[in-house]
Amino acid sequence: MYINNNFVIIAAFAVYLIFMICIGMFFYGKNRTTTEYFLGGRKLGSWVTSMSAQASDMSGWLLMGLPGAAYLSGLSASWIAIGLAIGTYLNWLLVAKPLRQYTKVAGDSITLPQFFSNRFEDKSGAISVICSLFILVFYLFYTASGFVGAAKLFSSVFGISYLAALLIGLVVVVSYTFAGGFFAVCWTDFFQGLLMFFCVLGVPTIAISRMGGFEAFIGQVEAFNPHFLNFLTDADGTKLTLIGIISLLAWGLGYFGQPHILVRFMGIEKPAAIKKSRRIATVWVLISLTAAVLIGMAGRMYLPVDLAATGAQETVYITMVQHLFPVFIAGIFLAAILAAIMSTADSQLLVTASAITEDFYHAKIRPNASAKEQMWVSRICVVAVALIAGLIAMNPDSSVLDLVEYAWAGFGATFGPLVLCSLFWKRTNKYGALAGIVVGGVVDLVWAQLSGGIFDLYEIVPGFIFGLAAIIIVSLLTPAPSTEIEAQFDSYRTCED
Image (cartoon, rainbow, N blue to C red; front, side, top):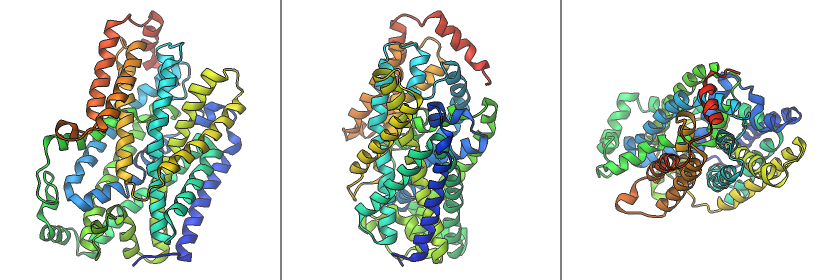
């Protein structure tokens, strides 16, 4: 059954949304500087850092995109989850602490473009401006994916039009991001991460239990389609190609270049707290991704309707919730989708606003702008970017997974190689940095427009490889960094403030 315009569910959503907005209003008066608005004054604890990072990472993709893929393909969809789990762990292990330390030493940088500029002493501002442009382009599509997910949720649950549902989601996300800044975003993401975790785990657990337990569930899957239990074949029995497997695993490469995740590392209170955060984040992501795949497979067995026949496979979680729970509980579980969507969209809006304000407006247009002026420019940017992303999301046939896939690859290829080289290769210079950003981003964009044969390889792979090669080659062919830059590189690992 579908629950449409039900007062109880509307009330559950309303309470949840009001709670999120109240968090934003609570932090409204606590932002006196741009460092506080964009980075929370570097005062995040282990739990808030880890939970907000993972919540902002997964977005509506966790409860819509991945279950939808598993609904269609079975276990072969798990290759994406495997790649993401590996990427999550390596990002926390390799990047988190060095980035927290280096951004503090390199002029107390509060955005990724600002860090690159300070790290390489780029007084021309070219690095920050180019970074800001790529951030704007890719985040428009990434944020649009969140709005598409919100619109599909509201439209499916309440029976309202897609455009009306889109407008509701946009207004709510903008409201608390506009008001509270980084602290509001991280604390809302903390609560949303908790809600997402328990709901994504609860749905397959209860569904499989009702089917007679795990063994009975596996038996039903095998009877329905044995290919669903094969990691190496699609649902129709077609073997996955090597390019296909590499493409799915390559999602893990994207983590090194996602500004909305990396900014969490920059905002943690003490580098020593990162080890605890890494453990929390790793457990969260392993359990959540496994449960998301099970939602799709269990939904294929449990539901009496074939969602794939109408192209509605991304609503499998919504439909499962409506069939499994009484009205009030269903409202809470459906709010988890909104939590997943909002936890990513708010982070992306804030990072985009910070890039435009700090790295373009403040750096190039109004160097003497006051902190108050910069914060208001940032808030205006939040609204403007949300409106443009909303226009992109107006097509009701848009796929959450497709939009995320495009933006994820763009960030991974554009910034991932440079993040790693900045932290671990002293010889990297500003010319190599510029080359890596441009080559990685352009190769990714061009490759994404091609298809067939080798071009079926996920664009993040060639973009990352060519971007990394450009950094190395150009850095070696141009003058070495100054002694001051090299000395700063040698000393940044000892920074514990």
